[in-house]
Length: 141
Image (cartoon, rainbow, N blue to C red; front, side, top):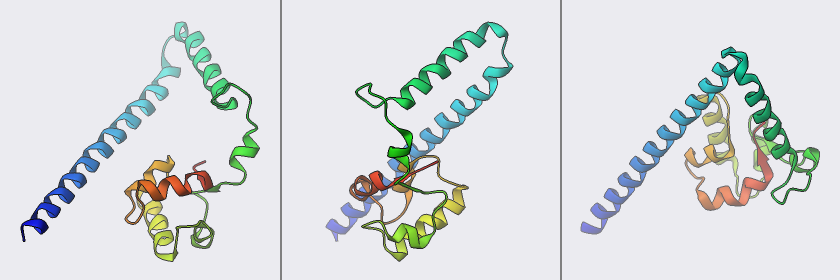
């Protein structure tokens, strides 16, 4: 009985930590979205800085981790877009069965679409190990 109580406490603690982390992530994303939507409204003195930031982001997106250019078609074309695939396509991924595929689709409907692959961790049946296995096969566009 003591073992079950300890396991329940540990499970609830991890669930609570995950909820807190998820809330913090959502707050951060909301703040980033608000700050990006407010930047074009600011004075023209910020335009050069905003332009430099977008140029840096474009440069970072078009270069790999070692600084060499990466063709976007190569990296994204063979990946399944989590916001566009159906159950059948999801089941082609090793480790995703019909039940998990349906859970992914239900969660996608619930949140209005994925913004990043890490959101799969919120789905029952997908943990860190499963996400690591399927990360190279999926993307969010």
